[in-house]
Image 1 (cartoon, one colour):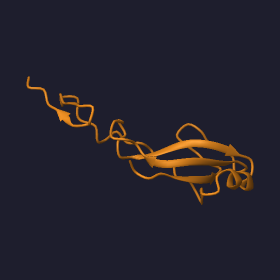
Image 2 (tube, helix red, strand yellow):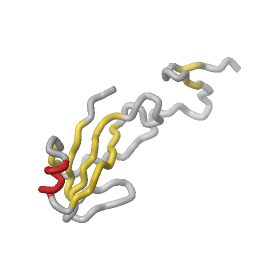
Image 3 (cartoon, one colour):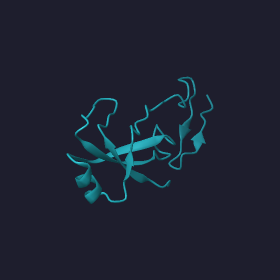
Length: 99
């Protein structure tokens, strides 16, 4: 598994929300596992929300303060076309049907 790290973002945003500049949100940044439809893409997990930077730093002293946002729109562009009849084993290896 890839290493992850924590960030503190002021006025953070995502696809369905936006916090005002008075909030500081802590996220864990990593990579989606191979078993996910978003395998290999950035994974951003909400950890906590604070009303001050000092409170966020006290709770997550190793988190990096980010100027801006770490949000990245997920992309399913790597998924196979509908006519691709492959499936995958539990280890993520493709199994192709023979019809």
